Each structure stands twice: as structure tokens, then as C-alpha cells.
Length: 318
Image (cartoon, rainbow, N blue to C red; front, side, top):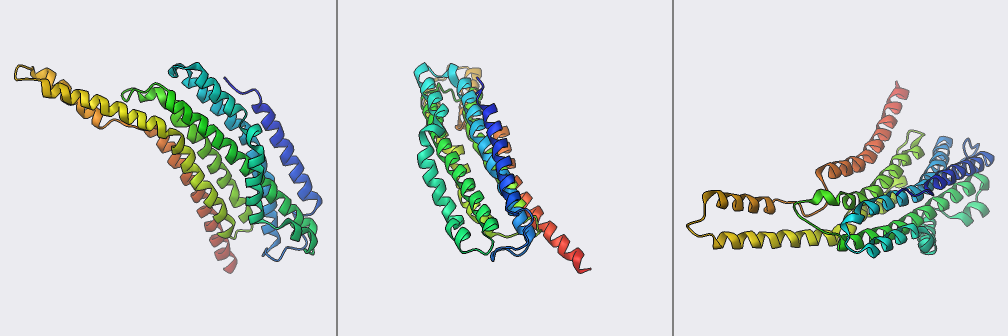
């Protein structure tokens, strides 16, 4: 069941992008005549303005689209949950995830934002308050949205975790739980997309590690958390199912006497081996490959930005 409000999210994202672009254009931040003390060139400020024009709308859209995707995954799991009330509670939690957690998300985002920018100083002490002030506003908006995103997705992860504790499990039929395994991939895609856009701030062809370190401190632990934490209950239940089946097979092997046929013994031994090597996480090899690809792409983009810098420097010296 698709979330019809996803279209609203895209419209809100577009409106956010237009508003930010207008602010940076009116303050001259896209092509500043002067640069703040922390900047080495006008193009660095242009890059920051471009990044802050695109990434906040990206998160606005992600707030709606991830919710819609999570609701669809919950609906896919509905036939495997014996108690329909569990599914409805999970859907309600996800549907209200932003509305119920916006206050705490705002507080978290404000803390993150103030660790990255000083808005009062930008407006009162800077010789170019328009440029520095607009950059500061963009940073605060960006981290506010990250705070909302984190809290809403934590609520969603908790709902998925509840489903994992209630869903029917069969260690030999884990393909039925693919929707659970894909739940965290949604968040990893969001993280990877934001990190892929971040090299825009290196448009002046100078890669600065300090521009990325705080984002990595937030992004990578978040990706690991959203992939694994919601799956822990179902992982333990799959393990328990596998161990119970193994004990049953071992008991049958112990009870098999000399009269047991070779075929029956071989079947039991083969079944035991299959159980011993069975996965206990509802993550297929295709899903894991996709996760690794998403996490590898941002570092490759950053390495590409650094390589462009080196090539340009080499070309200018010739």
C-alpha cells in the first residue's frame, strides 16, 4: 500500500530547494565578492551554497519517501504476522514517526547544527553577514532535517523490530522475510545519497577532510544501526528455530539403529548439514551486495574529488 503523501514530500522538497536557492542568490553566496575567514576561495563558498541548496531538499523528500517505502514493506509482511493488531501498530508508528518525534528531532538537529556553525557570530561579527548568515541558516536547516530524519527512522526501526519479534519464522524459508531485510537498506540508501552529494562543497577542486568527518561520525554508525538493530529479534528467533531443528535431527540420528536404511541416514545427515550452514539473518546475498555497493560509492566519489584536485593542480603547473 503506497503512501499517497509521498507526492507531498516531493513538492515540499522542490519548494525547499527554490527557497534556499533564492536565499543564496539574493545574498550573493553563489558568487561572493568577499569570502569568510575560514574559506580559501569564492568557489569554496559557491560549493557550500550548492550543497546546502540540494541536500536539505533531499532530506525533505527522504522523510516522506522512506516512510512510504517502510509502510509498503510492513504490508508485505502482513501475511506472516499472526496478530493483525501488531501490523496495525507498526503502521501507525511509522505513519506518525515525524509527527510524534519532531520535538526531540529538532533538539538533536539543533545540537548538531550548533556544533557545525555559529549563527549569532555569522550575523553580528562577520564583515559579510549576508554570505556567512545564509550559510549558517543552511547548515542549521540541514542538521535540523538530519535530526528529524534520525528520530523518525529510529521510530520506524523500532516498529520493524516489533514485527521481527512477532513474524512467523522458518530457517529453511527465509526468502519470505526479505521485506525485513530490506527495511534497513532504505536507510543506507538515504545515508549514501547524502554522502554522495557532499563533495559539491569541493567544487573548487580542494578536498578538505574536515568538511566530511562530522558527517561520517553520524552517517556510518547510523547505517550500521538501522541495518542490524531492527533484525536482532528475528535473528535470535531464526537461530532458535535452527537449533531446535538440529536437536530434533540429532535425536533421530541417535535413535536410528542398525536397521535404518542408508537412504534415511543420508537424508538425515544431509538435512543436518543444511541446517548447520543455514543463514540466521533475513539478509540475502543480493541485499548484502547492494548494501556494500551503497556504502562504497561515497568514498569513491570523495576519492574522485581528490583525484580531480590533483589533476587540476598538475595541469596548472605545466
